Length: 141
Figure (cartoon, rainbow, N blue to C red):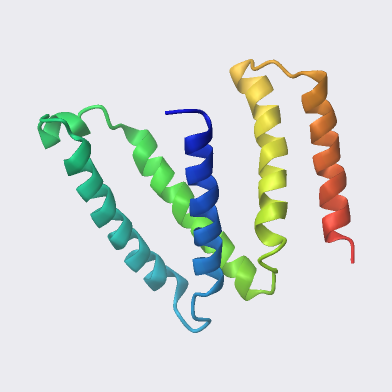
């Protein structure tokens, strides 16, 4: 798989994700909607697991799963709830994800350097400065 394919999957999925989240009925309980969302996601993931298991038992497939999957579940629910609330309080689809993802990129760049000892190039520092400046201009009314 080339480097571009996973990024294209992420981009396409994020576009759909934001369109669907923005289109959620305002009177729908966000947690009821998330239950339906995750039951659907579980069904799709289970079918994909069956199709990609390559003859291994289901037990062995779950053998290497650890606490991170449960923690990811908590993080995803709060992420989804945050977007639902952001759109309901008036964030525009054109800026909400942009602001959140720019801030996320800057934070993860810092975490990458401090926690994972990733190298920070001058171009990345310049990019981070541009991102912060972008956040200022995007939110200036």
